[in-house]
Length: 293
Image (cartoon, rainbow, N blue to C red; front, side):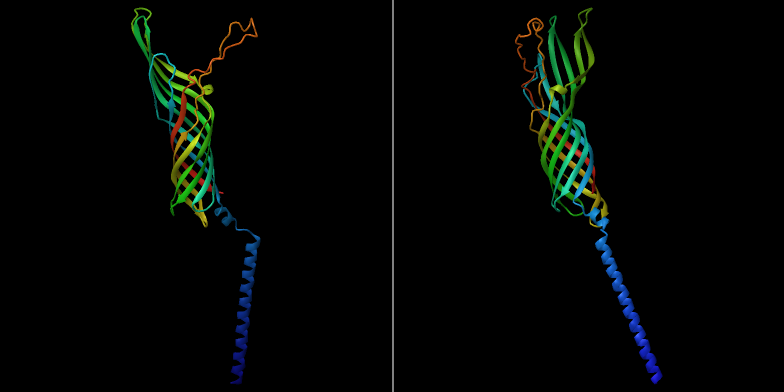
């Protein structure tokens, strides 16, 4: 009986020793794990929980120019501007202040302008000859919009945006067709001739600036432990220009007396159509990918 009692006490001490050893080993492992977390940063967490993101965009502009004034074309009947399709693409940077507000700046390459038709005529040898022009005015810009976005929604984040934009002109040109009535040199009959219209108008147009409003939604594509890493964004906007983008057609006067009398005063001639005021109006639909950084 005494022998069994001593054996039981020995086994109790052995079990107690093993339990203490296991507890001590577990405590050491937890301590080392906590120390490693303090020493080594969690890169996955820091990369996924950032407040900054960059985006790549491409889309479609539906653009027109609203104008006041008249083109100085002799015997012009009508000038009708219409919306026309154009391109837009660019990059963006976004700062997320909180779950409701973010701020965004972009650098875009885009095209604005209009489609227009004009009919003008002249009388030659008692006959009225009509010319019809159908052209696209293409103005290519570098644009910098700055926006504030208000977000709402859970899985799919909807947002409303508003802000200002500034655009620097890259080039401007007029492309189209002209259908002209001309007199035949043989029998004085009226013939119809079609010709291309291609003019570089970069000196006649200039910078643009205005306001922009819009909205869209953000659909997460790849999620991290602390938020979306990659998102698909569909965006719709309206841009309204407030500056007159038309500078007029410059005219360089030629003075035949300039070579004879260098001191002669040359009268400055104002640009042709200088009273025309053109302001851009653009609807845009864009698709983009946004990546958290």
